[in-house]
Image 1 (tube, rainbow, N blue to C red):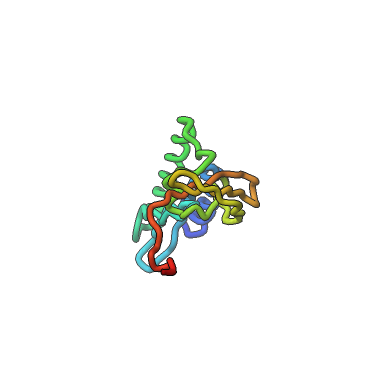
Image 2: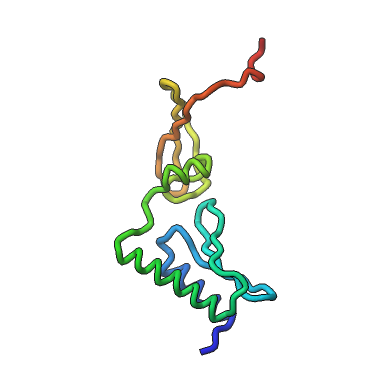
Length: 147
């Protein structure tokens, strides 16, 4: 069967809504004058990962199927999307997203000072998750202090 842009789009949509739904990424492609580019697009602020550049439709399909097979293997091994984001992702996103559903609809509450830290109660308006964001105190800005 001949691979067309329409069949590539249908397969990417099918995978993103089914097999890749519980992963931290999706798959996409774009057509350029010299061929197709296939990318993994992450659901957080991580930059996309280019898998293939300037390939034919058949080669793009092979890359897409490789991603599907890899995701199926990971799922079969029992390694599914974690319930919460990692600390690295939380820090990279500057604490601006929910730790569970990645929504930007977070509510920041009161601050509590501790030994070298400030803790802020946070909650998500979308999923209801609550957590504490902990800020380490390292210095203060002399320019902001009136002398």
